[in-house]
Image (cartoon, rainbow, N blue to C red; front, side, top):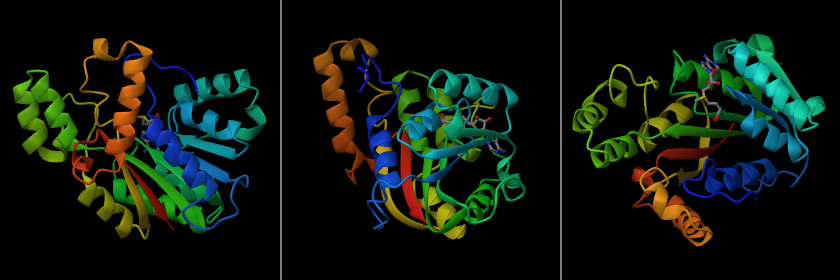
Length: 248
Ligand SMILES: C[S@@+](CC[C@H](N)C(=O)[O-])C[C@H]1O[C@@H](n2cnc3c(N)ncnc32)[C@H](O)[C@@H]1O
């Protein structure tokens, strides 16, 4: 694993969880079999390339031509162009872009926060998965944003995030909404999914001063803290993101 100093850019908890989901460890699928994966709103493909490098076929669906161009450069550089396909489109167009019931695993990370209609996006995700297929859903949590803004001394933004519509920290917040365990689980279940596991990611990474994790030893301690917090019922509400595993 690449050494990460300071605040880690990628969450080890998240990547471990995605790999577990791909291996089908929670559902008795053929462990380690190559999966047909859709990365909805996969952007520039940071996750798609890592998934493809494990041997899976990945289709990235994203409305941004710039993101998809960056994705194509990235996959070519990684020698994975044959295993990652870029499709330009919107979550609600999934039915027109990909055959229904065709995906083993669908990744939807950081997308429900920005789309017009999160419920419609999840219904489309459900229809794209085969029966028994898996959803990896990552959403930003609002309590973590409130806490981070308070710690940064940005009290008006903290209050806005706590009490405003969608838990945005202001009208210029790039996210249209944030979630919590009840709202994220409720949306997934309303779309027809059964939630099988939930982990908290980035519980401390955004809070710890970067200078405190410069040494390898401290970075390892932070990873250990994150791993333990991920499954702590008490700390789940404070995690920056929730990673839901769900089954169609
Ligand atoms: C915060 S980025 C997340 C990127 C990537 N999934 C990740 O985890 O790093 C949000 C992504 O959602 C895409 N997006 C925005 N609106 C969308 C829509 N209606 N349907 C699908 N993707 C959308 C954006 O282009 C962007 O790539």
